[in-house]
Length: 249
Image (cartoon, rainbow, N blue to C red; front, top):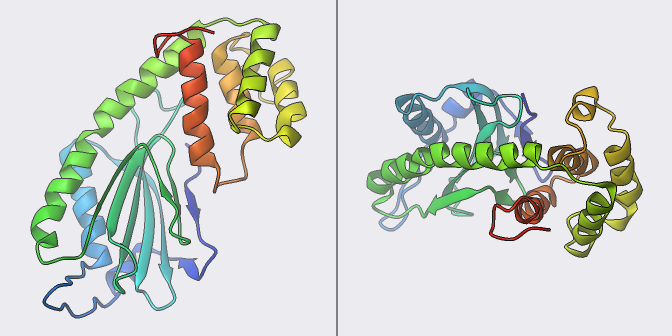
């Protein structure tokens, strides 16, 4: 099970569900209609349950005044639970600072500095019709989780099937450097991960694109701000190498 990347460093704190439920919702105006944090959370969970998806891990954060909420829900991935997890990121505000938002993906980053990244994104301003529109937007995003799961399964199966030589791996590393996927300071660590992975299960992968991908992910751990962009760019690089985008390395 992957660790949820809920980053709190600009005034928010980790909280439990009970603390979310008791946050008072600001009074509405003629043009602005706040949604209770707890209501947004339970609405998303209801849609997940209706789609046959169960939450296996969660993390939540609130600012001290309770006006801003950030959350993440990890959803069970029954087909390939060891390869990747499906995650739903949530944010909401009672102080007009940002709209209600939802992201879903295999790798999602949510932060209280307003960074909000994922493969599928939506947001809805707190205007008069938000209570009518929000359930439909949530349903639409959750419905795309199935497509995302299939995309990841196809992608990772291709990575596992493609055997690569040392020279091909090194070429991909240099191209990743040019694409700013990996900083030059991390290149020696990445090379070492390719040659001698620190995790035995990656050694068993053989010399494949999957082994290289795991080397990248291990090397890139730690910088959560840059991770979503780097991960998406990495997929583009390796997808092309595996022929998933109509071209081969």
